[in-house]
Image 1 (cartoon, one colour):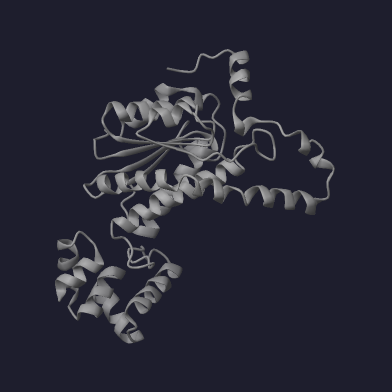
Image 2 (cartoon, one colour):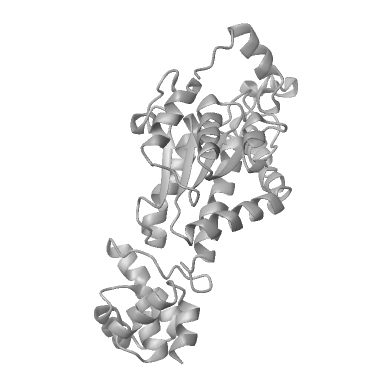
Length: 310
């Protein structure tokens, strides 16, 4: 249901959150030279990686659970409001060009819809019903994963998304930046990255936003590694949708095979520009259709296809 907390109750709740804490030692920050402020911000940012490192076991466990379900055809869905929602939309939007995933496989939902990516949609984050309505359109299954993202860990939209997903037996992850958060408690996998008070009181687009970005990078990237979307540290499923990516595709094939430039061009032509197929064609000395068949039989894992070819 939509949040019904009184303004006073909400103020008391916010005052208890580490992400909302006031830092009196920074009360005169606006009087400092620009370089000093920049040094302060840089020092604050340097602490975020350590806060993420403290939760790596929880992050890894969540990733393994996500990858297991995505291997069966499940989807990865991010749900959040404001900065947290934008982080999810950003991560989801980068998966198709990076890993050649169908846009429906990694989805970013933000409270208030796409307009909220660039403008504030008042009241949207306070609605659990809105999260339920957004997720109903996806017809969740037990193979899907929903990641609720909220710096405070109490945002009704994110908590509502996780609760709705759990009721449909989907895997749930709660990513928050406060300890003991309702969001983490509601999820199968609670990940709380405690970054402490922000440089600007309550501005969770700063350290909290950075922490969310780092964790989402891990969730999507390592899941895709587990799904065979890479070969070593090469993005062999990259989609060559522009000149830069076409040049990158050529370079990836070169790095993976060491083949001559002409051979690389012929392999990419024979495989319709599919990097993974071109690498297999060159390394296994097979034609384009055979490379496609071997990869299909290996669920897209290039190393497994190479073993099968040989």
